[in-house]
Length: 333
Image (cartoon, rainbow, N blue to C red; front, side, top):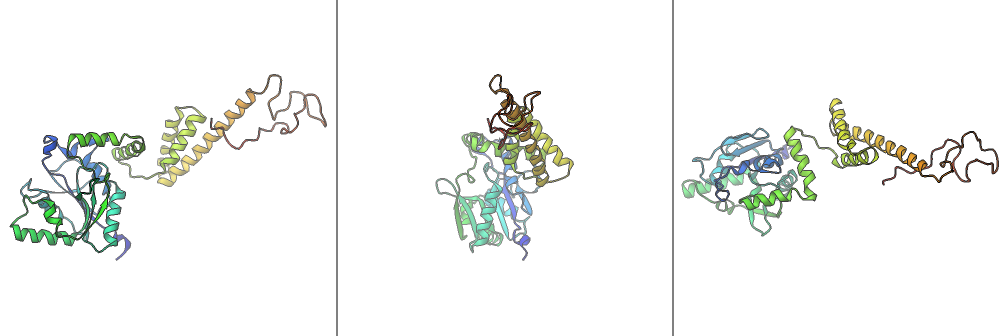
């Protein structure tokens, strides 16, 4: 099996449900950080070979397959069974549609633990240690086996809780109170909306939201762009920051490049901003020389320094005529 084949997985997202604790609101469509909850989950599993959403059809940021349990509203086990009918990979990611903090890193971690071990599933546990079977990766064959057992024993899957399905599986548990956080109530929604606006999260959340909104699938060094914006704002003028970063993006697009083109454009613009700031600092240093004294490094008009202590010559220890003051870089202040 090649490395690409070993990385293949399918995803089943359960997005039906009645959202009773949200007053029957369309929970997958509720926005957190400007994005629908369902779209946030779909972004985390974008690498899935096939993504099946079990729910009534709705617009989504990326294409998915649609399935529906029979009858609609028959519960999570029936919904999972309906979704699995459209999958073929050996490993399947099973998710609910209300996970605002699920990331691609979490998905990779779940799949990595599953593939590194011999168990039949890996699921997250929440802050109180409770299993979250809808934030999990499973071996597809094991799920199908247990679904067949339940169907034979119960005559159907409608109304069964997920714990009846997972009880027969050998599971590994991974604590993660953030990624496992789900939105069952309006208080949960409010907490999620507040968290993404915290200082440590807001920038990453905003960049992700903008990329999704604009249809951009490009990972760039945001630190380098922020450094560029800082240098442009400080060394040139505050409005130079957004305009410069826009021009960097435009230049990279013109070059039809990826992250490398962005990095190269940012490097050139940063160097320019630093040179600009150095010039300004040099002139500022000249302006603050004591009254009646020539700025350091210049030659008095009409006077050439000749030999020893000539009137109007350069002070001892300074640079020769026309040299700029020696500096290690622009003053950060």
